[in-house]
Image 1: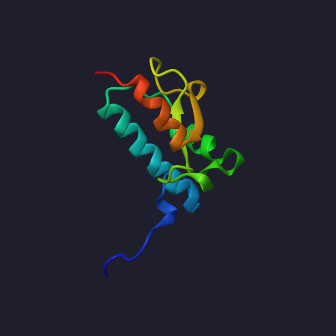
Image 2: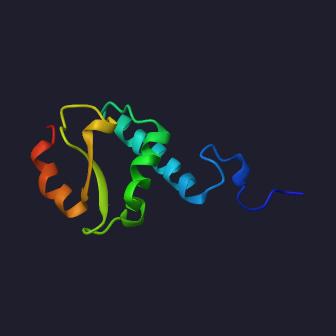
Length: 101
């Protein structure tokens, strides 16, 4: 008989669907940083904890007023101490100043 549906007991972040979603988002963020040749030193548990703090994950999204995680100093790697949470609108206003040609 083929397997059907999700199997939360096998998830690395545990059976909690929020932690699982954040774990997958961390994997994507790390892959994107690697693609952009940026150093990434945030572990999955740290990433999950950052987003769970103050229920930030509830405000994450793709709209201008939604939260995103960005670096304080674009010259430094992605670390817990070098990230901050701002709206996507704020991020796009300032991120063009830091683009590398």
